[in-house]
Image (cartoon, rainbow, N blue to C red):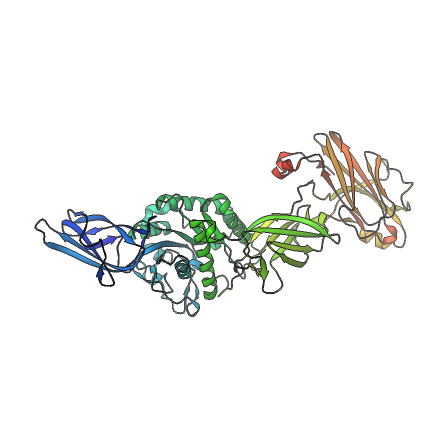
Length: 621
């Protein structure tokens, strides 16, 4: 008798919903009635003495071993009885367990590169289906590529056999299995399917027809060989897709992959616990890395019954691989997430997720408040909290303090609130190699995210940088008597300022202590009537006119200039309008202005839908 699939020495059989085995297996044997007897600890198991499982015909059989309770180990004796009642074939399978079985997929951080000395100690009730198609107690490395049965792993190694691992090979799979055993109290089995350096294109389920010559085909083969039943999938992949152009395809490719798994594994709600890629050293400024991370943390919004486990706080063993000690931590995080996916909130909380970003002001400087869901016991860090960044116009904004308060992180910046709410974004884990040290009381990391736009539910234009400006004009004092300049005088020249603060610092300083005046002129167009507000920042005496009529004057303006020093509401009819701003140099103490427009007549529900759902004034210079 030969078993070809579904029943092997030392394997873990996947339990069904009634917590018993329902193990389909097949092979070759002499013709006759197929019988099964089961022993546990050398004694016959009640109800499993000479159980008929069907017949072997034309040298082949297919049967199901039902009803073995969760646990074990069991020895299963199969025999074939001919028409004369004689036993004409037999086989004994030893040391079988009944519990949960998991597929491990992805690239090198799942395959395992951590040092063996730092790996978990084997536990007899946690088994692995190694690359050589043999079940054994799970002991790192379980991805023994040098003994692989599937051709794809040889092909991906340039057609050459892999060299045996010596001191490395720890991934999260064994730790995951051991943690699941601790959480459930039942045996666990993991099926090794990962391969280092592989991309989503190489995992394409459309290559299934290649069988063992494709990664996906090899995974399906291994699944079917073990009875075509599994409890879920554990996944770590994404580093090889962190190219800006390729990264754009990641979400769609993951949706296709998981849909294919659920179809081919016969479970439309198959749970998937995956890792958000961590850090990489030496890749420079590679935006594709954060693109993958941000897509990964949002996958649960698009794929049901999927959890994404952050790893950004874990240590490395080299430039890109999680260390052996940290792989143990990661495995436990994956197990906790998988447990919640399978049985719900009574098992705990899903991984920490971003909830809300808002902005306030403290001492005239912008403070970003980031709130999280699924936090256990409050956020904390071993030392000064770090990992958050604020980016404005592709430039990092100064952050001088991060405070942790329950499920919130309060990030205090060195720029005004108006600057942040004008289009700045907040990140956690910005760049390829950030230092992030914030977890909850359960030791679970915040997710990498960003860019997430900082919003106050306001409809505000970007800061205006394109003006027509005058040359430096004679002083007009506090501007009390200054009338709106006529269009023809003084002469104006187009000027595009390099930053949101439109300044004449160098020109004013050169003329100090002489007091001089400069005029800024801007045109904007409204496609419909609007109620607007001019948000003006300034650091000297200032006056502003709309379509020739004065709308604002501060004769005592002084530094520093802050965006939104003044808020001047007005009604703008459909058509083109002109804003004119006069600024005194205040004897060299003033430098320039901030200016942008806010629309005030829109409901918050419309603003939240996005700018494509409402009109804004168009700046035309």
